[in-house]
Length: 222
Image (cartoon, rainbow, N blue to C red):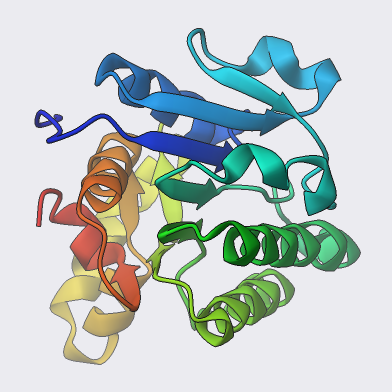
């Protein structure tokens, strides 16, 4: 899955105790990267072995920004768990606020590469969730940071397998001209595909803003 990296990198992750973070961190450590993760004290047991904890609050960068100054890349994975329409207020109070705090901390610290996991859009579902993610993307664009923004729709993996039943439907929709574009943009990706792409992006930062949609996530090392 992984190629050898050209150099050891210093990586700071906000939101590393979630679904994506817990799968990503061991792979980065296996490649001999130095990984720090923002974490609350009560959640430290969720961190994979080898990750350096930084105790702080994702909603207040004063609690952690000094720890990111030597980092090569900052990965923002903070978000409300199991998002659904009833969590509209949480999206604004957690997802949006934490993203703004991360961006502001990175600007002050001179971080060269900011990575944000957003969501595929436009889409007919989860409109409040998507609205906040779009606001987050706009904030990143306005910041002037070099950034990579990934837009998965649903990442299949342990505990996240029920959409496998939708794969035949997706394949059908991809063959119909009127629905092909939406079916591909809102398609499913596996956790393996997502991590492969994410690690490639970490190792190959771009200048400016790069948007990575579902079809490109599936392409892996490109």
